[in-house]
Image (cartoon, helix red, strand yellow):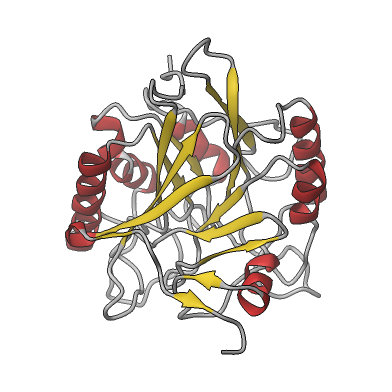
Length: 313
């Protein structure tokens, strides 16, 4: 049985977000990724690990470079640091996890065989694979005290008339609304996790103060399907976490919701000189809608205060 998620006696619950591992074949770069994750987990001792997509890379590679020949084994190897430590972990898929050689259903079947995962397949009728809600119990009576929502943000646009990345579909948003109606007090902490950023990630950078770095374009869908609006209307979500853009790590607040990039974790993919790999840490406190967040980077550096960006400055 998966381990129960519950606030600690000090009323805290800590999450490590790993994103864009791009695990391929267990080679040198993958081993660097493993060591980084092990360093983070041993230093922070989180209550939950969340992998926000592109755990493995099954896309095109330049001829002569290693490819992901065994995606199922690659995934097992990628999540091993959490499994070995018995830390509960959850995953959402990215655009590269099932680009070739494996389907989302096949990959999810392997995910669910891990003894320490708390991932759920979610309703089969919904778009995507892996739309689910997890509950964190109270440190006292164990009753629901916080909610975590996970969405499959898809891969690439299904329409010839729309270029670029996929979007979270209307049936997924309807599902979220229903889940939120069954939820708790809006003042209780609720977070959402998925791979591809919403268009609002671009909006918050352009309009509001943000904290962190933006070294590439926000690679969001060209279609705004309305998930952010639904989250505003239900009133429960305090923070949204994504990955996808490897050298963006900023966060900003838009209409009372914090939109946060993770910090890219994997070495088997592009990065930027002077921008070390790492993880975003998240700490919830029971009964509080707000949360703390910081970065833990390769080499043990901890960043609590990221540089401020002011639009137009």
